Length: 368
Image (tube, rainbow, N blue to C red; front, side, top):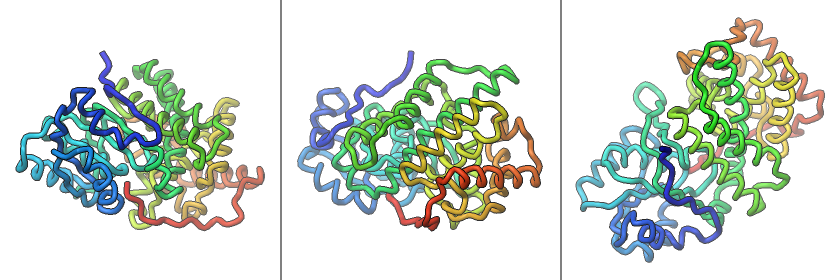
């Protein structure tokens, strides 16, 4: 048995039918739900859905932390008895809401307002804590709603970040298959199918973030990635060396880190170059071309880091996920070898003429 959402609704105007969805799917016949929204776009969206959820109570989520999730759970528990909890927002809001729902023992409905990462339908909450950032297992959402009209109003950069998140699946799958081949780690074929299908649909789609059809494919790819994690019972099908590198960037440069999707995209592009076979090279080329086509960083400097700084993150990366075997652990490169590999990757990208003319990269606040 696989626990999946009872409904996945990706289309324009989907949020207007949120009340009907709750009733029709027997999640909440009367709309007696707690609704968690973000501090920025949340207020506007709350006003838009309030007419459809007349019996709902609204709570504002401040920050993507364990403390914020515990506050939301405590506030909701102090209120009325709810049928479900609805999270409306970006990744931080949804992660906080999933964690709070798990504490309350309530089903959670995810209404995504941007497509920055694959937490839309995943059984994981990424939350900041006193020790840094942690990954917490939670039940996956019982329903997922993506209104393309709402998503289109999000910063384009947050949408592009989702491209990096889904594209990195190919790197994560290769790492998982490597671990199975060398160490006999169990591999779930259905999880791999979901994760690979999501990645290839995005990687090969000719559209841009300005096209509804591409936004739909990206949203469905993010949801499929979440389902892959549900099937696997872990983040393995979507998280390998690419995510280890991103976690290391967060740890080493907490004040300069970019968006998660940008970091894992670059991590996947670099990690694919560490494979000494034609398949790894082809995978790396495909990822780099996709990232470049959608305006994501493909060089460390485009993410705001020097070659030496990015190499330091790669060296630190294996320590972020002890017990997870990826191409980084397999190659086991020392600091000098990593630096040489990063220089080689940068040279390869630049000689292909993909280097952006303007390598500066802004990091505006995004309501994840």
